[in-house]
Length: 351
Ligand code: MRU
Image 1: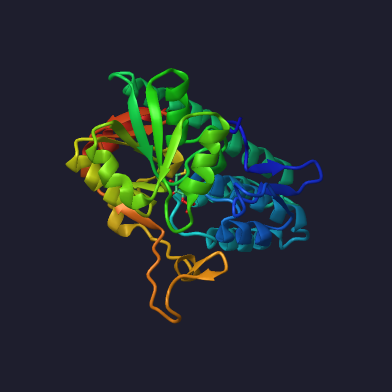
Image 2 (image 1 turned 135 degrees about the vertical axis):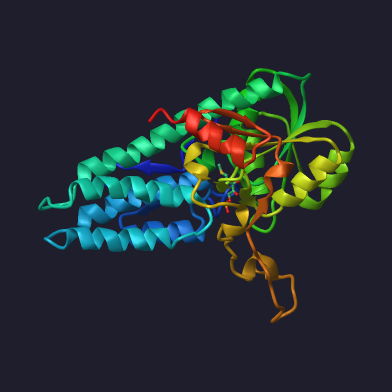
């Protein structure tokens, strides 16, 4: 079972163990790291990926930095470590959200002689535990939406499962819960070029749990959606802006356009740690571009002309108008827009 598989484990010897997602599903290797620099490098290299998992790793990265920051200069050294971690990947807001939670602990102890290592470790553990709890709650909310209709197949994109989170998953968490409750018949996973999160990770997670899954190239999606067998497109998010626009894995925007064309509903599943009310719209979201090699090579094989110009954005922005519902751990926002999102965020904030 992979539902509670965690890609991130804090070890008794005060190091961090990451399941190295670059090699799945053919090799199950782990990487031990003991510095914030190594945590930042692991995030950039996609040893660990997926918005919540990136945030959790960064939080533990601060703990690693705190363990090594001695002397009166410790606050400045932790600031530098957080700046480094914050530069590891730009799009998923969960990274910055987690660093802000760690910063609050540091600020509260700024005048102490030594960094509050235990408090920081407890906060990182809490971020990880809370993410699993959030995913289970989102699974239940999303499944309730699916229960309104007769069971059908669903389509998903990228990997939003246990590998991308504190466990269970966001979009894949809804799919897991819905499958357990008999609310879906089948999962269509897009391979998700160029890094193949759908083929290598989502298909693996689902196959391990014997949830029926069919893998197809990304460009088969319109054909599948046109066939009328798919009830919902269910995806995660890396950032949700104040007007309900959603940054997610490249290809999500095109899928949402196609889904609207064929009358297939679109569900975005994201914890509130993915919401960024400071940005007015998706136009303001920094979109990561990655190295050319992801397009020019398949393994060691060269598949593009030498020296060709490459554009490799790895996220895109789906306008709120194409999204039927956003599911978070605090509930469901139907037809998200600036007003509905603001009202919902106010109502769901216990503070
Ligand atoms: O580049 P990745 O693999 O980090 O991208 C991941 C995604 O786009 C996911 O859909 C998103 O982070 C939500 S994960 C729960």
